[in-house]
Image 1: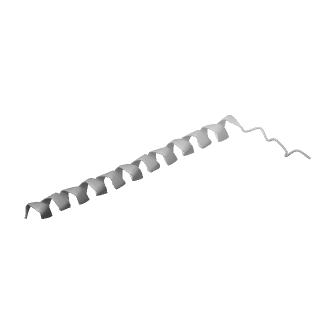
Image 2 (image 1 turned 45 degrees about the vertical axis):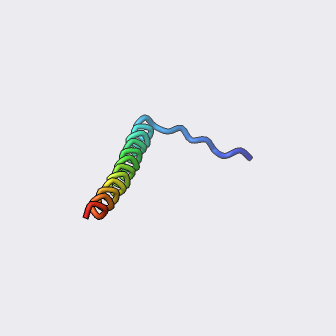
Amino acid sequence: MPPIRRRYTQREKLLAEVGGIVVDHMRERKNREIDLDDDFDDLEDDLEDDI
């Protein structure tokens, strides 16, 4: 027996789209923070090398 297909309302589609955009934004932000942490670690290493 095939699964029951449900038609989504325009509002539900928009909410899902906005939710996806928010998730993408948070994922990008987290990746940027990780990149910044890596850059900061590199700077710390460079400073230690200079001292």
